[in-house]
Length: 311
Image (cartoon, rainbow, N blue to C red; front, side):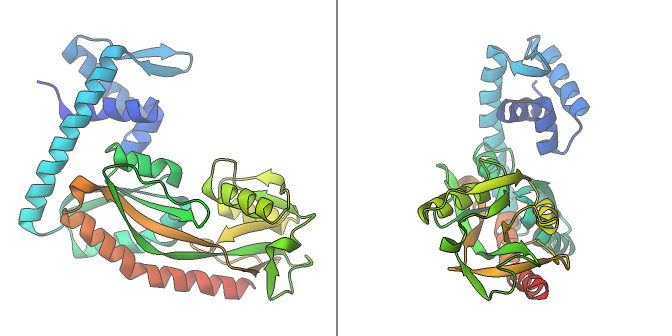
């Protein structure tokens, strides 16, 4: 009989494209995932992974087995949902993927309350970019995602996935203290001509928003430096290497040499909780959504205070 956990490991590799990425999504080591797949190969007497350079590639048989694993995992999820719904209390494991600033500024309090109120629920967090996390939900790799979008770039939601808005996160222009905008109450986008920017890499939602917004205003952005994390962007601004557009959630207090200036109109990103339709009745999902909404005003208020302190 095929082992479900080994099938889950193979399916994760098929989704993420590598053993290392699959291990991160499952909360295991790469060695543990490799061992699971090696055992599955012995059980099925089939070669499932072939080495290509430093990576691996699934064989045709592995792709077929991964497709079957997806169906089995979906069946297990429906069964677990039915059982949990009958119990009426959140229980079992709930895997949540959240983008970096939500993982830092919102999720710690949410996870702590869930652990305190529902000891039978094992909620586990992974930090994942929004453009990846929603797809991970759709493919059954994680149970829920905390994602975001902007007004000019709506969040794409695949078939079989549901979402609800958690809140709106405001965004500020972050500049060095000596910058020409530093003492301004507000700045309009049309005033950015000639500015150098530090920004997240291409393909990230914040980067795409900045490019589209400035080009709509007739300005071609001059991005001098790219960085993934907001604290790195703030450090680059502090060094006088450019200005940045940074959301408030999870940003933390700004250094003395940096100030936040409000834009007119204020850029807003929308936060969502996303889950599979088949798990919509699961108490763990509904309770997590409720807790997210309860904690959002506190997270947003804390973010507003850091803006006021830094301005």
